[in-house]
Length: 261
Length: 248
Image (cartoon, each protein chain N blue to C red):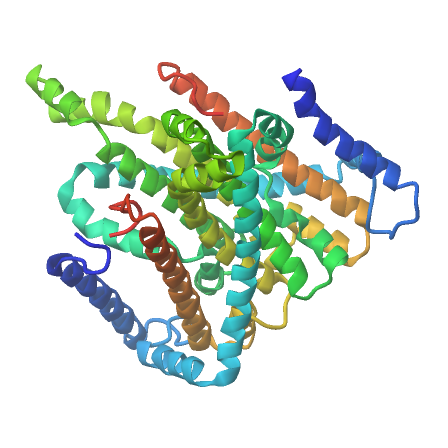
């Protein structure tokens, strides 16, 4: 079963499931048991979604969130893969950085956000750096375990055929670690989205997280739910993008049933 | 020798940090010794304990309910095909959605009190536990199940004696992710709206320029996170004594 075209039966089941959910929501909204503020009808949410999709200023909000999330994630990907490969292949680097990462791993980094605001201002920089910090851990940890597991025979044969150290790292270690690196990316990207939304909810004047809090505070529940749907779609789309990229780059080992259809 | 190298970098960071405090610096930067002193004072005066209690009263019920439901449903879904076809599409479709966006919705439905925070934490803890338990149960070696059947084990016996033990390592991996997530969500929900708890304390002391209290609360958050993680690792070592300790 390919990742692009799920078989018709499971696709049908998925559509049926969504239809049942929508129908249940609509009957609850129309029944008059709940205030439309608490359970707004699907048509009103749909209208707000349409407004969100057609108004340029709301598209800018989405762009802010995605840019912050991807910016912090990209920074973490570059630094994390470098550090992870180094720690996986060098005992000295592992001894130096290992304890720091394993010791601070269970600390919720979000608690540092107020300090980050004081250090880097309340604009995008403090948010991007917090996302960088949160994404760094899963990427470093998975890359390191992948770098350690590189097949020794491959390294020996490359060295035997006269490859330099840098060439071995680039041509053998990095490709062999790639499946692990992408596993780390797949953990880190939803974290990046979580942190973007949280930091925008806590302190921001733009972005999707701000839009959620603003709509809630102005009692526009239908608008809030529409924004929530947009955030969910962005999350799913980014995840799909990573899987597609992985299957393109790591073409010798397809991602089968893991977390995806 | 290895141990010394491991200690060198953290220690050097602390020493450089402390020495750098001798030079002129803004109010919101504090040295490690100063933070330690304030921490001791806040703990002694009882200023900190109610907030720690309030935070735990929110995160523990959320974590326990969410991970329990996640593990049980994940195992069942991994075992029964009919449940698999019903539940897995929903779970895997909604998995990449950042769960914090449900906080405003839940707040609308159950109010802005503790229940909404507990519900969101439980929701976030559900996913890693479900997915790991699901793959743990599905990864059970067929040969083990066959030999169990061959030796006349009943269905319930196979589930209890074969499927659950072989799924346990992954279940613990899921629990560990969930615990970390529960802390992240706890502090962010408390920062967004609460009248008590460590997240609230960080937020309030920050806005009233009590930087000493802010650092104390951050250290308490870090300590809670580490303690919970260590507790889980200890429990895992106890339960999975038969498995060689490959995990950190």
